[in-house]
Amino acid sequence: MIEVLVVDDDVRVARVNAAYVEKVPGFRVAGEAHSAAEALNQVEALPRVDLVLMDHHLPDATGLSVVQEMRRRGHQTDVIMVTAARDVATVQAAMRHGALQYLVKPFAYAGLRAKLEAYAHLRRTLEGGGEAEQAEVDRIFGALSAPSEPQLPKGHSPATAELVRRTLMNAEVPLSAQEIAERTGLSRQTAQRYLKLLERTGRARLTLKYGDAGRPEHRYAWATRA
Picture 1 (cartoon, rainbow, N blue to C red):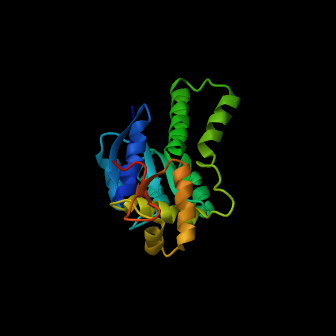
Picture 2 (picture 1 turned 120 degrees about the horizontal axis):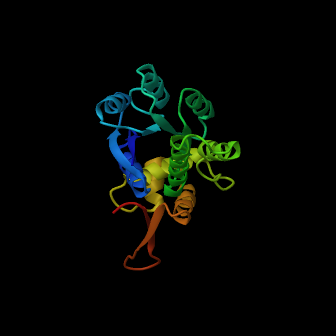
Picture 3 (picture 1 turned 90 degrees about the vertical axis):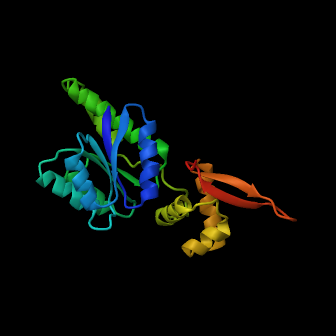
């Protein structure tokens, strides 16, 4: 069983990502952390951590600085960096400092599952004596370093998609496009466009609220919410 430490400053996001990890056969969540200091403490305190799912944006430091400090302390734990598409330089630096792979926000379960499965395949290959053909090794590393999600449709911004995603995840109840717009500062039309995208990709769930008269109101909830 591969033990994973999930690190994200947002408690709700960490819980969702932890639930994703637990769904992948062969992986188990060893713990969660919500700051750089807590992540470092967990790496040292937990009985075993094979892999860290590391958010780059933490309240007290960057994920990259956590990776650097882990290496300085002698921890060679593998790392998946989670970062925004705009942070290309950060991703490249993370790879140089020992992050095995990366995920670009926003990502769904399928994206994380593909990374974890490729990582598990690599571990099995190396633990088996590393006798795989070079082409097979190249294929595995290609899967690990490739972008985690298909490109967003033309005209969609990764930053805006992440904003809508986090707003929806943090909501206690389903929200309408107008309510998303009010919470994010986006126009209602823009909020509706991104909500429909999240629904089409299975990340948001559409419900209908019927009033006294007229058309029912479309309301959206994060798909992993119980």
